[in-house]
Structures are given as C-alpha cells and as structure tokens.
Image 1 (cartoon, helix red, strand yellow):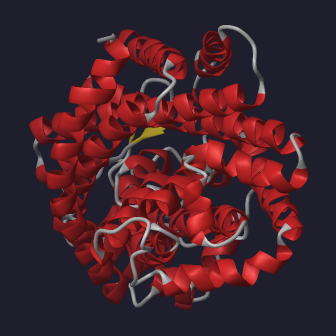
Image 2 (tube, rainbow, N blue to C red):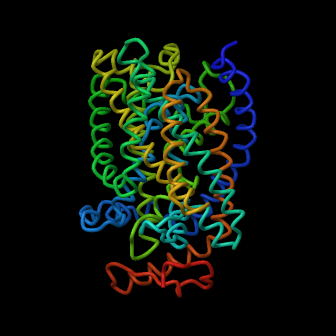
Image 3 (cartoon, rainbow, N blue to C red):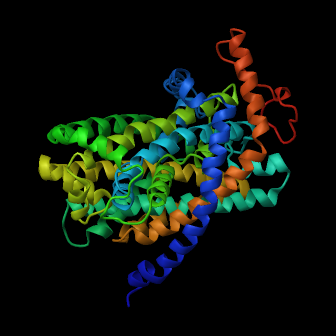
Length: 478
C-alpha cells in the first residue's frame, strides 16, 4: 500500500470519525449563538445592509495614503480568504454530498453567521494591539488572552488557528487549484509543475510583508469576484431553460433527501453548514484576525464591513456557482456524472461552452486559491506574532505556508485535506464561539456607543475604551 493510499484510507477515516463528533458540538454553538446574536443585534446584518455595504465599499483610496491597513484593504483581504475554491469546488461538493437542498441551508447559515462575524470582528478590533512592524494584530488568541487574562488560552487558540488555516485550509485551496489546472492542462508531472508555480508565487508575495498582501488583495479580489459572477451568468445563459428548475430544486430538496443519496434531512443541513462555513468562515475566528489589522476609528465599523462580506460570499458568489451546476439538468443527471469539486463545474460548463470553460475555471481556481492562501497567511502571521513577536516566528510561518501549499498541490486527491481541515474547522468554531459569547457584552456596548454617535449626527463615530463598562485588557483605544 502506497503512502497516498494510507493517507486517503485509514488516516482520512480517522479524521472523518473525529470530525463527525466535533461538528455535533460546533453545530450547537454556530447556530444557537448565531441566532442569539442576530436577535440581540436586531437583525443588523439584513436591516442595516445598506449601511454595511456602503461602509465596505468606501475608502478605496485610503490605503494608498498610508502604510497602515485601511478598512477597505482589510475587507478585501477578508474577501480574499472567503472567496476561494470553496465558492467553486466547495459548492459543487455540497451539491454532490447533500443534494441541491444544501444550497438553501448555506443561505440560512450565511444570514445567521453574518451576525457572528460582526461579533468576532468587532471584538478583534476592541482587543487588537500594535506590533513592532507598526501594524495592528488581533483575533481569537488576542481577545482570549486580554479578555480573560489567560495567555495559555490565547496560545491554544493561536495554535488551533494556525493548524486550521495555515495548514488545513491552505492545503485544501492549493490541492483543489492544482487539480483544476490538471483538469485543463495535460502534460507530464503537471501536479509538480503547478505546485512549484503556486508555492513560488506565494513566497514572492508573502516575503514582501503584510502591506504587500493588503495591496495585492485590494487590486485582485474585487475584480476576480465580479468576473466570476459575470462568467457564471454567461454559463447559465447556455442552460437558461434549466435555471428555473435549478432554483426549484434548491427549495424542493431543502427538506427532502434525493433518492441517489439516501440518508436523512440532517445530512443536507450539516452539509450546508460545513460547506457554507468553509466558504464564508463566519464564526471561525479567521476573518477576525484580518479585521483587527484595519486602522479604523471605531471597532464596529470593521464588524459591519465583515458581516456584509459573509453575505456577499454566500448569497452572491456561491449562489451563482450553484445555479451553474444545477441548471445542467435534474439532480440524478448531475449525480450520474460521478465528479466532484471543480472537476464537476468544469465538466458541466465545458458541455455547453466547449473546452475553453476548462481553462477559464482553472484560472479562477488558481487565482481564488492564491488570494485565499495569502489571506490565511495573514491570519497565521498574526498568531505567530501572538506566541512571540519575532522575525524568526514570522519567517517560520512564511516557510510553513509555502511548504504546505507546495505539498498539497502535489496531492491528487483532496479527501485527506478535506478531512483534516473539516476536523480542525469544527474545533476552531466551538472554541471561538464560546470565547465570543463570554465576551459579547463588550461588543454590544461598543455597538450601542456607535449607534448613539450616529443618532447624534456624527458621520464617522470615534471609539474610546471608556464606552465599555470594563476596559480591562483594552490597550489601543485611549
């Protein structure tokens, strides 16, 4: 038995076994607390969407005037992490594993999760701190330590986040991108070639530092997101007669398991949750690390911006992918193709658009994987600096990310990387959501302060830690 057979066999089965247990716990926290946050925030993510969207798209030029990370740059890095292979391969996988109804549950969890994203991103801003490079850093490790006064808890969160994103998510992104490229370009040792390209380009950007990552994301992410939606709409036009049926299947299968799958409705719901969280990352604490890097006048601003990002990722980008796949025909026809991930999307689009679709999707997969990779690097660096703010730690993280990207791109089956990332994603979600819930009072007080200033006619509210009933651990809002 080869090493790859062992990885995709016994080891992957072990991860999936643990994964099922962890997700049972995480499901309660992600959904239960997400609903509570939504109620307490009075449906902010939907009722205030005009305000959140305008905040997200404002200040485009701000980052050019300073070496600090602007709110728009932080939004783009966050969207770069969110808009990755999960929006293409992840959606296709969700449909194959849970049927068309999984898309409906992805929508529901995105709406609920955007409230959680607001909470964790605002909290990350409240407890952020400036490091020796002049940039702000924050996230679960930082608000765990500062909020509870426990560095040990912070280190646990930091290590867990690096394993989840610096290893697991980067591995999935790189592997999927490499496989999509292999599906389009056929030549000997292609996995190795693409692995070298992905890892090499990642190294060039990462070793230039955080501001370089921010500038790259601000230029590339918005353009690629728009281009993907445009391409998806064009692809749907080739199967325009199937779009209505696609929408119908999403709703009709939301509470009914397709005969091809068997199982139970719970499978559809959990599949929708897993793939939705993998794509938009709400509640995982990942984007909170990115939100903390922004130089803003009030923590709530980044909270609102990042909550809007969850909706854009799932309700817009993921939905267009789902409609491309489902407009192909009835679910039994799609399932009969026997494909998964990006290869399924490639097969469906090339059937109507020709082989050119294979190359276009491969390009999107490569760029999305790359922008996600550098977003995950940003999170990993923040946590490396938390453990010890030294150049050696930062260098170690950069090397780790490049090595993982290379090794994962050489893997031909994404099963082991999916198993690894899913398991740690569930653990990260449970730990982060518990911490956020216990510190949620600070967020609600900051939000009350923000709304009070807005009602008073202040166009851009400014935060001072005196607005909190207990400012212990808050160091950057004098």
